[in-house]
Length: 261
Image (cartoon, rainbow, N blue to C red):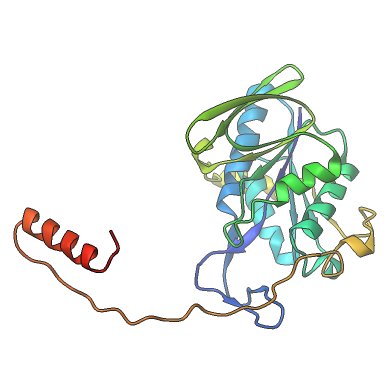
């Protein structure tokens, strides 16, 4: 079985700023890490490989330093990595991100299962995985917290707000995984050393035959119209003392007076 897993480099802190001109994150000086939900995707891919055999290729798009998250994916156990790095790809929205990632999957070919994290913590759109599937013309299953293989089918359990749903989808297919699916493994020192010898590829937009009008800012139909901080409000703090029942009653009375309950 051939599995492709997509990973993204995201800031390692919530203390980031937005460029008021472009609306993009200002990443300079902020340490970056693998998107946590993508780490769940890597773990899911490795567990499937260990159970059913096959290979796992990690793919990312970003500047040269995005190779750091691919190194971690290799150290976790992926067999090879592909980095899409090209100035022409910069400034992309989710559509112009999903398109080159789909083109990379086409170039690799022969895949059975594609895996993405449910969303990236720096934007939380949950759009890139479905966009990749749409460009490839393959079925997708989102919000997956468990997956097994049954012949030509992937059997997935989806986490819905009030229930679970089991879906049997014919491969090739794409799934997006939830954090509840697993606990990502830590790379061992020996696997970190092995990762240095694994194949690592860097492709630009021409290597994957991208249409220049569908990548970067030119291929991004969505943009930020305005970026601003929400207004700050001064609020008074009230402290309640006494027995638990007295404090609970006082809090309820206060909320009712403020018409909050």
